[in-house]
Image 1 (cartoon, rainbow, N blue to C red):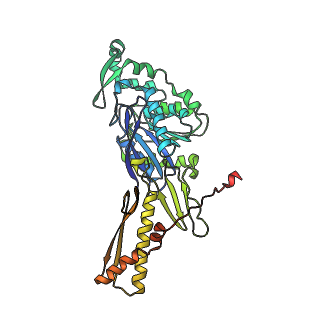
Image 2: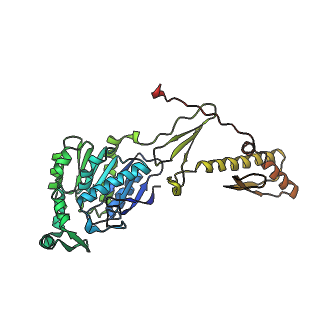
Image 3: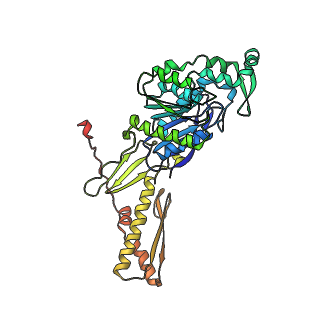
Length: 406
């Protein structure tokens, strides 16, 4: 089951941008960015439905509110198409630093124009999909055409967009004129999928024709027959997401998905970075695969237990198994063992300064008498991991040269 996480990052103007990261069940095959339509938000139906559907197909998708929109901070009046492009770049940098650099860009309407314009600054991107995108950014002028005269003469005007008032300034109009997308499309290195409805009455299908013709290589077209501009029918959003997922795999490939390392010989445990976030690791023990990470409050992604959590798990599981072995051998009426282990650093009698303290609570279920219970608690201190933690320990470290370096 895919899951959704709230995250935030600083945008182009320094304001914190609200975002949601849709994560698949298991390691992502790749990371993607979704750019919403003009004056909308990350929570518009098309953005949420497509992002979640892509997550079900194995992609991790970051959808966010541009500066001044939705739940993001900042003043929309200070933004323009150029700042939207830089917000996208900042989102890509955030993914690269905290998770994995984006390989797929998806943009809806003006967001589609923005992903095309931002691609040159996001070298990790291998595929771009646009949904109902205009062929030039200035197309958005039609949304506030009756107020253009006032904007030009007074420098700004309040216009109604989607039933909400927005302040549009002259600098917004001026900035739009500087962005013709056909040249950017012609220079694209990533593959391009242009998706459009022939009945779109907001951004006409002729825009799709211009974008498709401008592309020089690896171009595809998806006819969203019957869909409206906002893809408000869930079936249309689902269809678009399914096609994008299948199409993108050809260009992204499975190599973007972090592969667990091979098991070690002679019972060793192998730990290798996943590339998802700064601290994510695969942990391989024989046929068993686990994740290790750090909690979010120390900069991790919390995708698995921390190293100390594994150490607590080792002590707890070894304690439980040792007690079960002893109870079986002595035919004790022990029904179930539950061990809870906590760890902290603090002072302890007989030691100078702070030391590592493992607090182990053991619950013994069964018709046991007082002597049997006491004996089991004594046996708990004899479990091998307990002895290891108390005994002299030597860690010998050597460098293993990777095959590509030999």
